[in-house]
Image 1: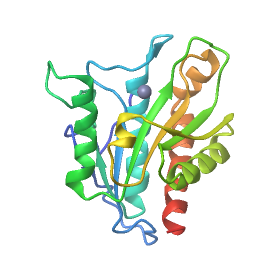
Image 2: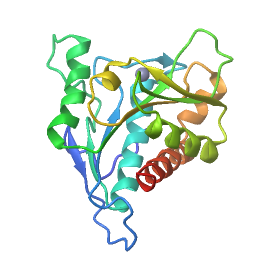
Image 3: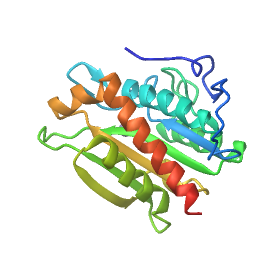
Length: 212
Ligand SMILES: [Zn+2]
């Protein structure tokens, strides 16, 4: 189901597209992509689909697209693994993701998730930024993501998710859709729709740096 290419060799990996694009608007930008969950932490599970798989599949696509535009992309994971050793707490797994950003000197941190709620009628995408800090990165990503996917726009909100509040750099957590909604779950598992999501987030990141 997953489309893995240059990014699947190591748990934490740098993405190298190996191509010679002339236009590199993200040259010298260091971007940490965090496909949420993985390993023993699958995230939401609905209709036989796992959140962790969707997050990773979109993350690998986005990694390639960012690298083609000159960015140095660091993935917190490139396989179905948890980051902290067995027996660790969930907070340790989340801190390991933050540590990737801290040790890599990253410019931005983007965490990828899909939502999972009891109400199966809810649909659409939302972006979150750290409580009390700038909404800029989440806002540019949300705008481009909605433009690209035509998903229901659930807006941009502050939140206290661990990977947001413990990051010192601009950070955004993207809920790309609802796995609990049966129609949207099928979209989220679809290769073409995953590419639309990746293109939307890509354009949002480009716009974010253009505005700096
Ligand atoms: Zn999640």
